[in-house]
Image (cartoon, rainbow, N blue to C red; front, top):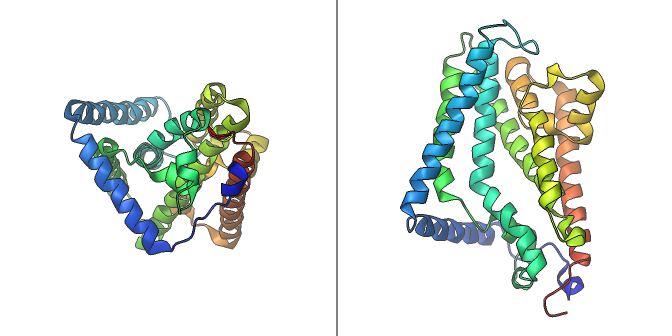
Length: 275
């Protein structure tokens, strides 16, 4: 049965997918308002997480002037960007990632394979975390604050490039997470790989300059975790250059091709509940 629905796209255009996503948003906000205590608890919990992350570097820079070649003002922008990326992930993808192994193991993925839209789109975006959206707004404000407190003029062009690179980093973060979940089609359990993903993710939480040369190359090309935060922050301070643009394009195209190919491979191994 899976083979009959292995195609990634079920037809339609951008407008139809946009309208579908609006329905996702409407449903998610309505459901979040039914559990208001949980809604506000998550906001408070994430705000505490933001305070701890920023405080860590303020305390660290009481004992050093530079970390990976960056001063306190630069590392605050880096950390703020990480908080923003985490908020994007929690808002758009996290709930969907949690449900994907369950859908695969229960055979409930059947309900998504027969819909006339991309199965990958549906399982990736159907659940919008409305409670985390408030934290995304807060994280965006923290990024704006970190940019405004920077003592030198960054320029509108660099800030725009920074925002574009953060969007690319969010996409790559999504691809990396999917790479740890798709093996559920064969392993039927994602717990071990998901724990490994949390450990691997830690390499993105610190500036790439602190790592050895060979590890930096891996983080820039093989498992492109440096593109989550380090590369966008480098682009903000130093620009990107044509080599950087070309490298970014290769990483984005390669990541997308990998995601589509790996997803289709997983669908071929999917055991339907009606099989």
